[in-house]
Image 1 (cartoon, rainbow, N blue to C red):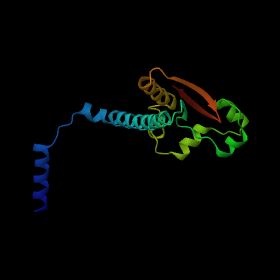
Image 2 (cartoon, helix red, strand yellow):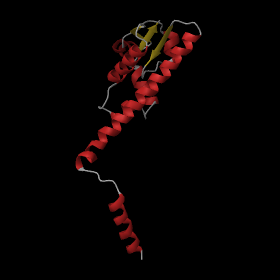
Image 3 (cartoon, one colour):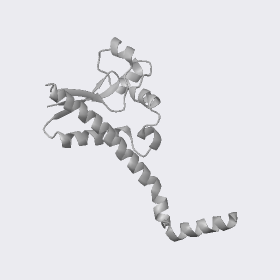
Image 4 (cartoon, rainbow, N blue to C red):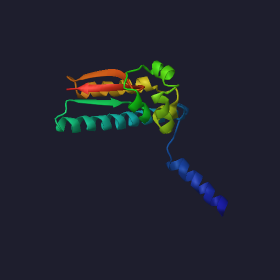
Length: 154
């Protein structure tokens, strides 16, 4: 009886199931990563966009933010200087805000996909989306507290 049910299920799956060809199966990996990257980009963009809108409603004409970087709270208090990421590594005993962010967010898109997308490409895509949404605003990049900071002014 069990064998009959198994054969019946296989035939139903064959008759009503979707056909997947080799090129579709081989392309699923890239398709999943494309969806993950798009979702991560949209989530980050929406969070930045919402904060920009909140500031604009409050009458504030600028907003500073990071993308995938975390500054040390003790570093923020001690070091008000602007350092490049390389100088942070040398001056602040190997501190790297990007590596700290990766450690605290192990399921983020860059950790999951490894070489599929870099943080530079991810950040560039976010900045491009912001430039498109706010075409006459000024977006500048600076290094502060061992992180890449972006500032948008309107």
